[in-house]
Length: 271
Image (cartoon, rainbow, N blue to C red; front, side, top):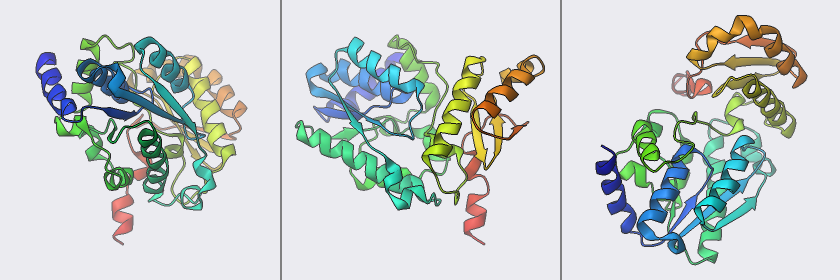
């Protein structure tokens, strides 16, 4: 399967000749960068990364280390989406406004370096969730090689392992704003509270967890395999969450699932 996926993706990438990649350091964008470098050559690939308060902290090291190891040029931009009221107000369209702002900046940077085409890691897996940001990306002309190749998350991990990428099995991540319910104004303080809480949980061995912020209450979503750790680490979990600035600690017994805060959104919009 790996060779078939690799060939299909290569044909799509070759159409563009030169490619700038919105690079987050996650599984999807890392594979896209590796495949593009393999097919197009390093001089025809540009990585563009945005550092913002919405970013997950542990991805920063991956971005810098992988760019150096791969020999691909990296341009880093620093932006604060909270300067936009449309984003800070956190309506269900927040992701659209945020994607338009950030990807617009990536497109501008790519153009400055002579790259006409920008690609992202959007794939078949992403279609199943509410993603208004995808509309913004399409409006900007961003291309989606994985989607065009019919690749989902399983395909991406499979090909990542074939390329020998160290993060092929890393849990999926999303921007920290996705931890805050719609219509709750996003502040730097809330984002930092979530960042510190999740970092603390990762140190306890809870990989791929989420801390959803409901005011002073933290709703923790764990991977299914991590529930066995709860009895032993209950006090440590409580300590970490309270130290991050929350006052109440809840464990969501349904565990981690993508797009928790999107649940019921379609129904609410149709009322």
